[in-house]
Structure formats: structure tokens, C-alpha cells
Amino acid sequence: MSLLSVIVPCYNEQEAIPFFYEAITKTASEMKERWHDIEFEFLFIDDGSNDDTLNTVKKLREKDSRVRFVSFSRNFGKESAIYAGLKNARGDYAVTMDADMQDPPALLPEMYKAVREESYDSAATRRVTRHGEPVIRSFFARRFYRLINRMSSADIVDGARDYRIMTRRMVDAIVEMQEYNRFTKGIYGWIGFNTKWIAFENVERVAGETKWSFWKLFGYAMEGIIGFSTIPLSMATWFGILMSMVSFLGILFIIIKKIVFGDPTSGWSSMVCIILLVAGIQLFCMGIIGQYLAKTYLETKRRPIYIAKSTSEDDAERENG
Image 1 (cartoon, one colour):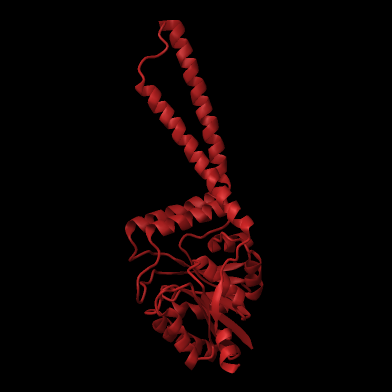
Image 2 (image 1 turned 135 degrees about the vertical axis):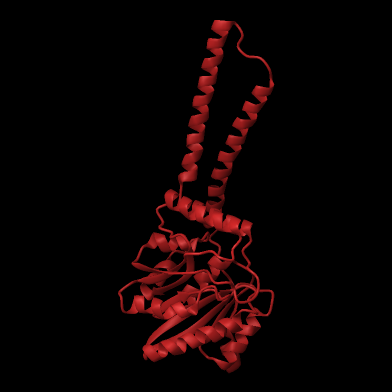
């Protein structure tokens, strides 16, 4: 038998989970008719939700033993939830997807065929349209993908989703990377493996509201750039060299002006502007270095990526014990 683990990170998704469960079980039944040896487990990762998400999942487990869950002690973020799902998945294959139905379950058969019959290590999805998203968010998202691909060695496809199916070998490779500051899209590209990309048009969420504000996405983008590129540190160096050259030219100009005209310079406003400019660049460069130091500091603490408060296995032991 071939077991497929469906990993679903959830944060305040009590409204969307019933719709998702109905759709994914329908897709599972269709896949079972095509591949008779396939079995499923549905692993929900409750990322410290403060609504009824966990109870909703527990009710599903009461009627479907394929449902499992891991509940965090607090909100650790989607990156930690994905890692927890991959670490706790039992399947020969694992697929990560969102509960809000923006990752269409109907694509799963094509993705599974790619890893099972076409010798791919993974099949990933990417959005070719962003209909329904704010224009500013779409603009900055496209700029981010272009920027990070130029600045890092990780291959990150424009519009890439976390909706991806992987072989056990690829899952194990990701779980081995136990870095605290995680950027999964970058990890996928960094570890390599043979990936098939499947394009689809943007789908509106079925219920609830998005948890990703513009500033959260901005912070996520910065996480990716800092995690997979050292070019910002090089930028600080080049800024220093550039300002040194400008200062040298300015000194040379003043000397020539003094020799030719007998007046080195006049006024204080220009001097204040120059001082503020140089100070601003210095603080900017210090900020870049500080970001890298902060990430290094967090890594050296060796804190766990997540803390599980309860799991489906814990509940089963209590019921049987």
C-alpha cells in the first residue's frame, strides 16, 4: 500500500475546515478508484488557533480515523506548522496545502501522478494570476520573487504556493534542515530535487479572512532574503566604498576651489544635509548587519521550532488507557 499524508496548517480556520474536508475526501475517493493501493491520512496542524479550529478537527476525527492532528501551545507561524506536518507525516508521499481552498484539491491527482508515475521527486503549484488580491500586494509580490532570485542561489518560482507533493526522500531532506528561522520556499529550491510545476489560476478563499497582512508578507519576504542571501551585507560594504569615494571627491573639489577662487565653501545647510545623508547610510548598513546578527543569535539559542500541546495520538492513549 502507498500512504499519502495530506498536511494542512491551520490558524483560525474553523469556518473553512468543513469545506476543505468535504473536498479533499471527495478527491481521495476519486484517487482511490484510479490507484487502488493508495491510502490517505489527513494531518491538521493547529497553529495555536484561538477559535474552534481544534474542536472542529477533533469532530472530524471522531467519524474518520484517517484524521490526525498536532496542536501547538501557541501560534508559532505557518513555517513551523509546515515543518511539524512534514516531521509527523507517516506517508510514502506528503502534500502540504491550505485549508482555505485556495489550493484546489482537484489538482492533487495530477500532482500524485507526477511523483508516482513520472519519476519526479515533487510536484509543485504556482499561480499564474492574482485576481482578487490587492493590486499593491500583487505588485510587491512579483518584485520580491524577481529580487530574491537575483540575490540568492535558491530557485524560487514566481507565484509559487506551498501546495506541493513530495516523496519521502525529499521530506526527510527538509526535516533534516532544523534551522529556527525557516523560509520553506527557499528550502525547497535550495535542496534541489526534480520538480514538476503545475500552473493554475488564483482561487478565492472559501471562508474566513486571510491572516497575511501587507506587513506580515513584507516581514516574510525579508526573512527569505536574509535567510538565503548575503548580498545585503555586500551592499553595506559597497555603500561604504561609494561614500568614501564621494567624500574624497568632495575634499578634492574644496581644495581646488580654495586654490582657484580663494573660498573653500560657504553655508551650513549643505553641510547638514551631507552629514544626515552619511549618518542615514551608516544606520541603514548597521541595520542590515543587525538583522543578520539577530538571526544568528536566535539560531544559537537552539530553541525548538514548535511545541506541541496535544496530538491525536495523545488523545487516543487517554481514551484507551
